Length: 108
Image (cartoon, rainbow, N blue to C red; front, side):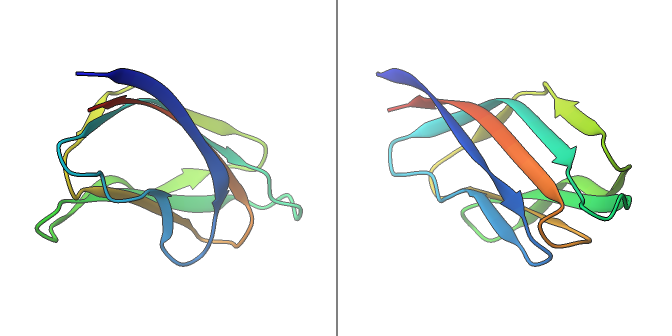
């Protein structure tokens, strides 16, 4: 089994934004760190949602309508395991207001 570290960066939109695409067959991805930063240009507070959709279609909330005040960052160090077909997505209450940075371990 090969273990490799990866990272993904991006900006959450007001619609569901893919953070991790569907995990490939015979692969496990373990989220080892995640930051969400409010970078709003209007000095506004925003709310964020973060979820995992299991390969069978069941949506599981990780963060639900969590307030992110202007200029602050949420850091999550909880490990999250995604299996074949699982995806991770997020959204924010204001467009282009939340940066994300995710680190994960891919095992194939």
